[in-house]
Image (cartoon, rainbow, N blue to C red; front, side, top):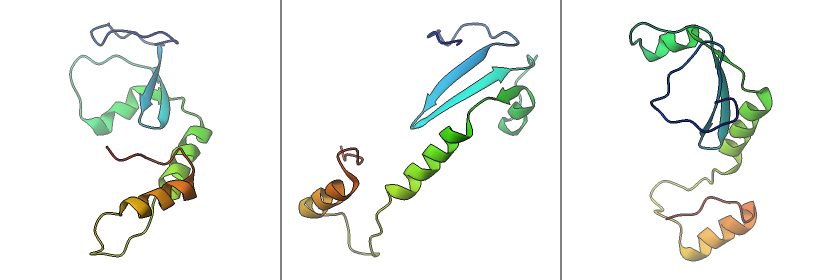
Length: 98
């Protein structure tokens, strides 16, 4: 919140800005209205303002398209050699299997 880490139990106030790391996306939101009760996920956008830059959304879209490797159906998981070839193709920042 406003550049500082906070506990989940902290009360939210109108006008506060929160930055949340969602996988590879750094999402920034501003609280515009407080709620008196819980609402559905579709209605949350009425109570916050999305301050996330277009560059962040483009970055995540680019990552989704560049890390995908097409494998024909039925070929199974990549072998160790194929995985190394994929990592070499994408560089060292390719996703690692656990």
